[in-house]
Image (cartoon, rainbow, N blue to C red):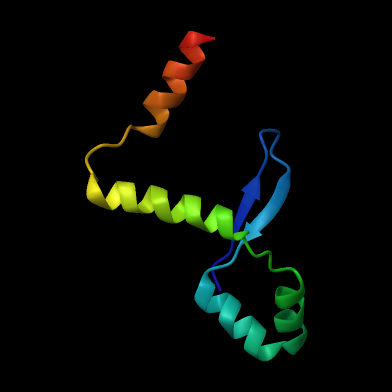
Amino acid sequence: MTLQFIHDTKGNTTGVFIPIEDWQNLKAKYSDLLKEEAENTVELAPWQKQILEDRLSDYYKNPKDIQDFKKTIDDIKKSL
């Protein structure tokens, strides 16, 4: 199993990333994980799903009409 630990800016471990295949294996081995996952799954509201569908649709229609994330954040910081 290959785990990736997530750290905050001070180096403190704040989480762990488990590859999906490993997660599936753990759920098969430990049935309580399946129950835990079901109890903690959050469903999006229909209006939230619609916003995501609209945005994905726009992207698929114009995949070149996007902005670089880092450049966009830098532009926002410069305007502050």
